[in-house]
Amino acid sequence: DTKNVDVSFPENYQASQLAGKQAVFAVNINEVRVKGKPVLDDALAEKLGFDKLTALEEAVRGQLSVQHQPALRQLVKKNILDQLNEYANFDVPQTLLDSEYDVVAKSIKSEQGINNDNDHEREHDQDSEDIHSEKNNADEGLDDEAKKEALEIATRRVRLGLMLTEIGRTNGIKVSEEDTKRAIFEQAKKYPGQEKQIIEYYQKNPEATQQLAGPLFEDKVIDYV
Image 1 (tube, helix red, strand yellow):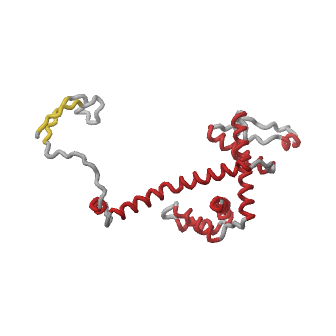
Image 2 (cartoon, rainbow, N blue to C red):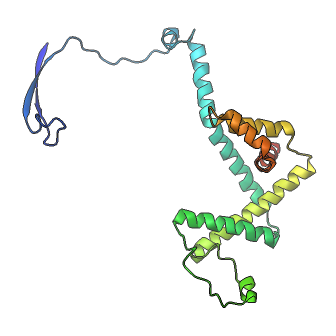
Image 3 (cartoon, rainbow, N blue to C red):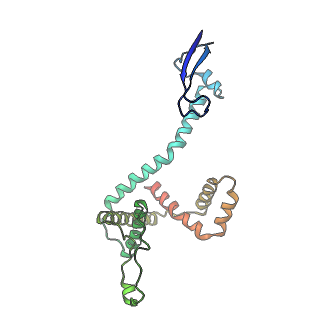
């Protein structure tokens, strides 16, 4: 069939010689196809490079598992921590709480776009006693509700951290050298082409390697629970 299609080019058309003009496209229709219902069979699998349908299904299943496993892991972990938190009604060391509170408060300030590091200049004639007695201003700029939230989050983190440590200690859960090596290789895989440099970095920096141990220990305790 042959059809004429009337077209009005817009005023801001990228080809200036056609902008705002009328045009007619003469179109020859050679074939019309209608979308049919997909058939899941071996023929489809072969088109996609698989021997048969079961192989295709297994590949799709594996892909979905890889995609959803991290999210599922985080959900399970959150549920476990939420339930552990119901039993965490003990007092925590003030020094640990203060330190964690500062971290949380600064994080909330960053999320809210608050930056008041230079809002107040210190007086040069202030004596040392006043300086040492001055309260840490990590939460400066936060309202009372945000400060309360920061305190609740910090208290939860410290309590859960102590609980996980105790669960691990009483059940002999430890981070082995093999665990650390696997974690280093996982980190290296995140930087294609730079794997060797990443591994060498951890080998030369014991402190960086030690930082991997904390999350590894927590994950092992979560797996145990």
